[in-house]
Image 1 (cartoon, rainbow, N blue to C red):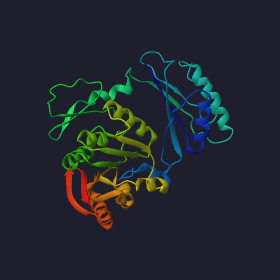
Image 2 (cartoon, helix red, strand yellow; image 1 turned 120 degrees about the vertical axis):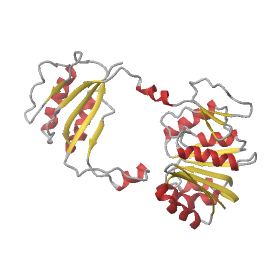
Image 3 (cartoon, rainbow, N blue to C red; image 1 turned 45 degrees about the vertical axis):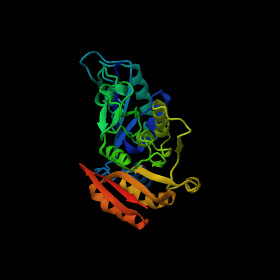
Image 4 (tube, one colour; image 1 turned 90 degrees about the vertical axis):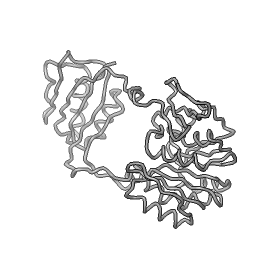
Length: 338
């Protein structure tokens, strides 16, 4: 299917009204590009180590959206400039949708400055973007005998003692290709035993939960703040023949939900694994330590080298003893013991 990409130039003050107007026309999923500074709440929700650099806000914004019909003539692109007087569309492009957007912009301009109101149109390639990324995800190995494979790919050269993990990450983090995930899996290979109970905090696709159970762990409890990730994790557990009897999935935020923490502390875990990010691991570590058995291991990653010392301090302040500090490129995995 071919799509038209629409880029509408406007002002930040008009963004909400224009998005509402587009919604009335059946256009959803609008991307907003602006230079508005992030709020403290937004920074907290991003959970990133290094915030993006944003240029000074000049009040301008772009709205980008796609439609699948009404394509322009071959090798053409259309430009419509509403200006301050909402001018007519260029004669060579009279798409009905543009006319409706023009009318909507006229209405919005009565209430707020819409800026230039210029609309640029271009045609995208005929590509199945939803599945395009699959070209780059193939079967590979971690350590001696962990084999990660996508469900759509046939596996060859599997040895008798190999542990096969099928992963379809969807929108959830965790295919095993990222350094932090690989580091965590390698540490799980060292410490998981057949009686182990595992707590996977920020489980994403559940790859670490699956790896631990395939390595012989008795039971696993996986938590993520994202409902979509938990849904993806559930599908991955089923693909790997893991039932509710050996794994429990839950959506929740241990940093904010005291009731969830209370339920968590009723169980003691041999291994807690958290592949998140350093700014989350620092406040999270003292919260999950009470759920860790005496002698149990805490495996955490998602840590850039520059912030490793900060996480190490939080681990030591929580009463844990650092066992190992492993690097892969710019990423660090820490293992500590209670």
